[in-house]
Length: 465
Image 1 (cartoon, helix red, strand yellow):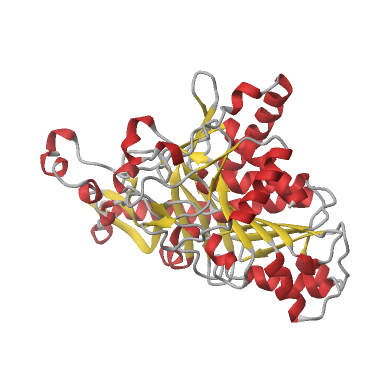
Image 2: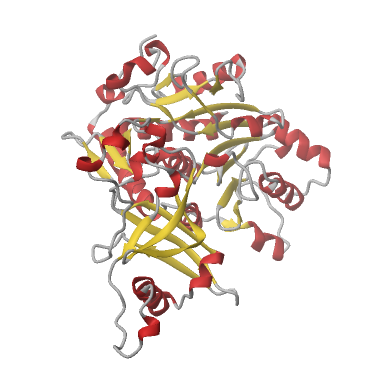
């Protein structure tokens, strides 16, 4: 059952295609660090490939037919792409589903304060993180500020070479005796993950004694006003996310890996997008669904638990000439889905956390998790054997390297994806994606070979499932 290393099978032409794919992926990682940026990136690429917005089709009262390509967006954070196939929609769709959000720090709604001539932004962490990993790193601010008149201002600070960066500070080792004996989950408290953003007080006249309070904070507000026409109260209607600053990098002397922020789950989102754009005229309608909020339970209007996907499919049905709600239900039931999410890569330095026969190894291709969940498969979508067999046949016919895995040892590992939510429609669903080292850390590691094989696998699935 040992899987082969994909690198050993590659020709020069394969490696050329692999490198082209991974260069595009790194571009997306840098330009799509947040779910808003990711959605905008996906929409731009889709439009360049001939996709048109579902809203424009509705407004023009056009009918959809085989070969039409449309996309729908929810609140700028979730996007669904549809390539209408030759077969009846009642026969179902082939669906790829990934998520665009990643663990990070979010700026609170009343965040700006000053202490001892240092100005900070108060934060609340988002998703599952090891809090101690987020201190002393160069960090950037990404997001939007929306004013009361509806004006929206995009914010990105810390990514250009001339930009300042920010950080969460940590206590020096010389004074860390008490911290060093704490458990890792409390060594750095969540309320201490505040972002240091300034230290220079604004200049005031010597006669104006009343203004000599919180001069560093006033300096920050002066800068924000000048650059973004932003008042302090505008933080209340802002969504500002703190992410690691800097570009993705090739990793290793052989440049066989990628080191970057947010590869859970951007690696599956990007490979899903490319696979979708490469599919020309599918037999069954192809769909790629890229959602928000997976890291906090797929909740809210932009998460997978919302009705956005179902509503979009209902619109597709009406525009394609189907009038029955029963037809919609048949479509969803007859669909097949790959829940495109990452898996834990086997790390020899932490071998005691894995059961090696059922672990995902870097370089051995796309990873299938028949089930996720925790302990006794709690919270899992446990895929049917018949479906796994079908997918295996497609991958082997297309010479795609793949492997199967569990997320760590029984009673030790655990995790969830959007798979169980789509399975509620009665469709066949299985989790699959790319193995990741350092998952949920500020900088994660993937193998370029696994990225290449996963895109190939997704494309084969959309075409042949």
